[in-house]
Length: 399
Image (cartoon, rainbow, N blue to C red; front, side, top):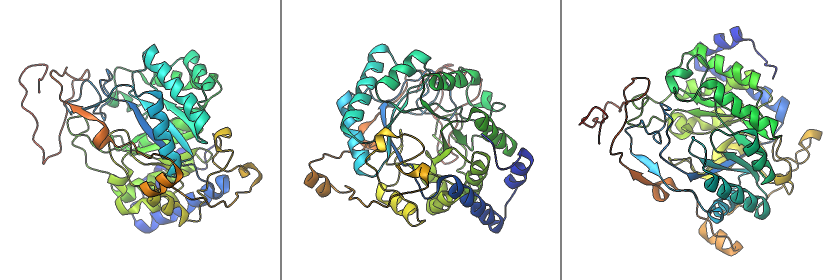
């Protein structure tokens, strides 16, 4: 992917601190977004189809075996449950739906459940279908495609040079190989990372240009929402203006990628989310995240609509995964179709649809780990200053 700025220019923009200068950068990124995508949007929603007990050591994740945080747990969903959540996402205005499982990969039995869930979503909704199932080979990627999946998500998480600080049990190259297997199967790729893991500004630029080399269809940007009891559990939230600035820089480095803001956007951006949209976003992750709550879909639709962006759903949505939800997009036309959204129980019942949004606050159980192995990199898990760490009772740390 050809970038609109050089590494040196990106680094210079990264040093901006004055809000007026950042607003000028936002305007520049907005123009780049309009040049490549017009008023089109690409709104996504997800379901946490399986959670907890991951043997990887990613420093940001409460699901890791090595984290002292309580682990959000639930077994693999049944295919019919995945369909139920997909219908709720569609009713809320999402254009695509992603079925997400914890990062190790799936057993043959669980993988078959996910494939059947994908088939049901393909058959019974007009959503584009995505999957995030950890590390896979080309064979599994082809099975996903045959089941109706359009796109597979697999993050690199951070810059190659900073990656050993984030994860040690899975090499950066292994993540890239998974992306290559997805592309080999003829699927779209969704590859991004997390900002505010302790990386430098230079490493943020490095990650963006590495993503440009990978050239994914979609790039999700996450802002760290620190989980107490993880390696990065004591980090402060990112300054909203810093986050907005880096969204704009990523847009200029990745002008043709579908850029979306995902985890941590509410906690980090607060009332400034609309400005992040203007900094070049194609969409956001609507509804709830894997283990945390998010804003309601009506607020997201309003946020994009007030900027003149077209959030309408199209009849051919599920058949045309790229670049977005506009059937006439490649011809420069974006039909203005207004539809009713089902945002209340009464709306849903009248339409004969049961809407039960993915809600991690009620649909996850949190389990304290009996024993916690030391982190492979020797680092300590951390808590915010206002929280007290549990007292170690053994070298392996029991809680």
